[in-house]
Amino acid sequence: EVRLVESGGGLVKPGGSLRLSCAAAGFNSSNAWMSWVRQAPGKGLEWVGRIKSKTDGETTDFAAPVKGRFTISRDDSKNTLYLHMNSLKTEDTGVYYCATGIFRYFVWSTWGQGALVTVSS
Amino acid sequence: DIQMTQSPSSLSASVGDRVTISCQASQDISNYLNWYQQKPGKAPKLLIYDASNVETGVPSRFSGSGSGTDFTFTISSLQPEDFATYYCQQYDNLPLTFGGGTKVEIK
Image 1: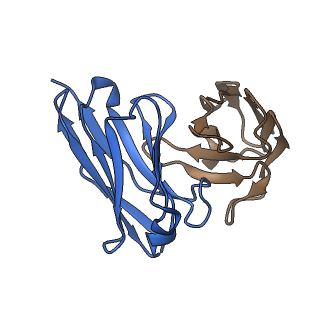
Image 2: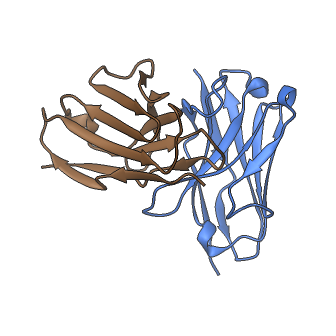
Image 3: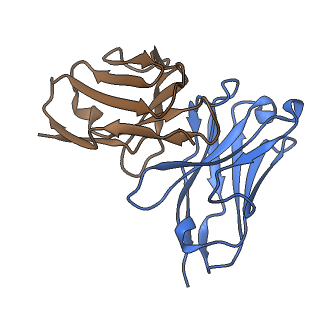
């Protein structure tokens, strides 16, 4: 079964940092482009960023609200994706999903269960 | 950035009804459009990709059409398990953007 399992969510103070992990199971994620999508409480979906596969250069791109504060990395030996969040703001509060289409770059057929990030003093 | 305008933002319908949701892009996105279903507390689920292709395993009562700037998502006969929020998403250009969502509720 193809699965993504997220971990690392929690409560953090404004200005703090947090790292989310997304472990892939049931497929080799090394060739997949991986994305992060978030959802603020009671709101819609917002794309956060994407990392290409190693063979495509591991290039990352981000949405404007997180650019310069968030980074994405991957450890293909562990089949794991990471979202590094720095200088967190209260408006970063929400559920964070990792998603992939495996070989379909932006057609997200597989999603994690979501990790709740709460930024509050 | 490409703006995705989805309408209506909510609707009430009965089991067996035909439901149609619209999504309009602020510029031509060809057919680079997906539709997702999301139920409370759950991750989104891909239903339609490339505007009109039904994802494997998704019931045939779900369909999509359109290209360019105007797109339509249809449920031909609403079932109890279809009450959820639906989102369109464009992937023609970064940043990837979603419509605001349409909440389908029970009448």
